[in-house]
Length: 398
Image (cartoon, rainbow, N blue to C red; front, side, top):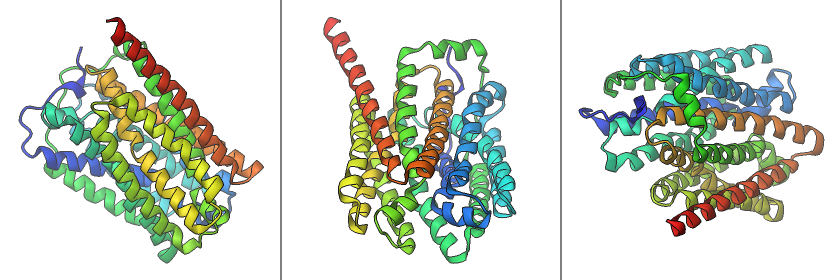
């Protein structure tokens, strides 16, 4: 049975404007999710917290998003997906206001819990919408644009948040994000078409997809690549400042370069993954394996650390769209369910990575997180290569 996300909307009046609007929704939620990365130290100082505890600002919403993504898909029933996205964007604006007003870490984590609810819903609904907004031949490009919001969040969101935090204080960074979320909500109300569904998702359909072998492999790859990445990236600011000797005022600019590389990686992976999905994932995993090697060998200087960061952005930029393409190919008739599982495991990876990174930093120092990302990337290479060999043997036999 086809779920809501596999229904092509035949009469979308402005399909590409709608795609861009959905891409801006992912931009808004990912920027909000990642905003503490560039502001971790000043927030921890202002709220009287350690860096390891402050990393809960990443872990808490990620864990809630992981739990709530499948719940949103199951609970949404036949509610128009446009209405759900608009409601979630409104809540996201309120969550950012609450973060900006936080007097202590408990308040901040409560506000970040609301962010987690928005994350789970927006990602689960938005992930499979390309097939409902554009013709079949354009789904690859539309998916790249939707997940381009993730890469754009690295380019414009996190670095600008760091810059605003440096100039006006971290509270203004969250306040600015509240305004952006409200503007994206207004755009959705203008250009996003009605997205009704003819069937609701049941537990039986969810359970059936959990038995899908290729989906299982994709979820394992998601956990490895995302978890390893966030074990290190959560602490990218101290990694650059303490490990590479980068001046604090240059962190925002370097993150901007990281994001530009991420956008390039996103569209490169989106273009290639539609035809060579497994090879694309292997290339991404190898790139993430190279990243800690570059930091450990060349990253002792500002120039070396900056170069390693750019390579990191290029590799990780393709993760979201590459893995989502894997999910869509694994479950072509249940894309909303696949997107919910993907969002769930993606955010488990963020939470586990951020928590593990916090423990490693507090106990063993900042460079320990580089070993974590390298180990996870190496395991992902092994898994993807094994899958590639299995696919090749299957073609030979047939």
